[in-house]
Image (tube, rainbow, N blue to C red; front, top):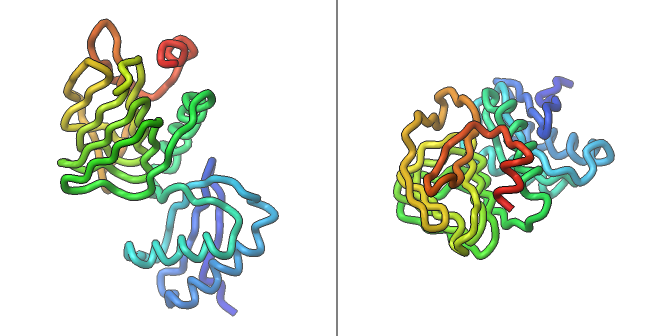
Length: 221
């Protein structure tokens, strides 16, 4: 019997390789079987997933994620493109350091139109924040996707940060400091360079590649 689905691992994630000519019903069945059988290997890990081979629609990807959630023990936190697998891994490493001493809320999905997401905790958006939408957090904001909308971190007035896989926001406010991004962001299918972080320094908002140092972490606590 032809195998339509293969699973490969990458740092902090699972790559699902699907035969291009596979019928979607067969794909769902095989994915359910594979994740059920691999539960003892993956455990209850929180992982990203990427797809290769067959071109799936958004609805089909959602159906695949539902099957994984129902049959497997892993927690899929987001979907990344093949090109962004390494970028995601670097971002996860930095995020883990930053969130060690802080509880955070997760939001899965994209923010579009005039949607506003507001929270009293730090927030990790497992998706993109598109133009016109806004994220407001009392503490930190992390976008594991593209950031093109507006963000307001540090509503409590303390030194916090905004981080994103792809940084190109309309406006950024951290505490009482406002700023605009002057770099070049990349979204969608275009090439992503490095995740970036925005934080305050000398009453200005600074944008840097997401290579976190102990000194910076201490300043952001």
